[in-house]
Amino acid sequence: MDDNFFEKGLEKRRATLGKEYVDKNLAAADDFTRPFQEAMTAWCWGFGWGDEVIDEKTRSMMNLSMIGALGKMHEWEIHCRGAINNGVSKEEIRAIIHVVGIYCGVPQSLECFRVARKVLEEKDML
Image (cartoon, rainbow, N blue to C red; front, side, top):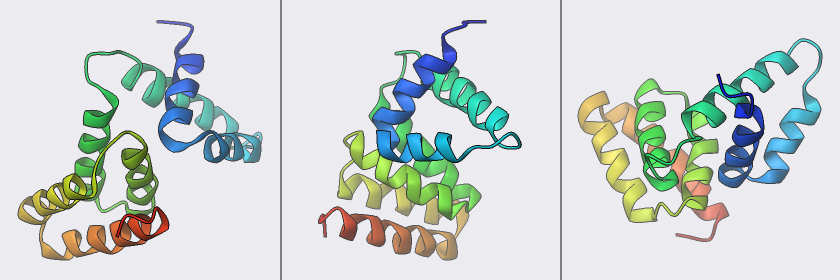
């Protein structure tokens, strides 16, 4: 396994979610949560996002679809911001939410729209 997954993951994670957000999370990690933070940075961001097969914008769109389907709205909000950082437009976010609604139901799409509106307003995109 690539020993550089953590460093590569840290770079990808900061680029998508923002350096301030990532560094704050890592700094807040303690002996209980640090191993998980480090493992997820290496596994999710280093291994999962570390190759160049799929571009960051597409990965962000996939994440919004999957996390929206799972109904993990706190994570969806974080990744909605990251998706915008990776070039996903308001119109593309809306289309992703439409797909979530079709395959996961109207209540879940309404949750996605609620959170997307919050993020888009923060970013002055509405």
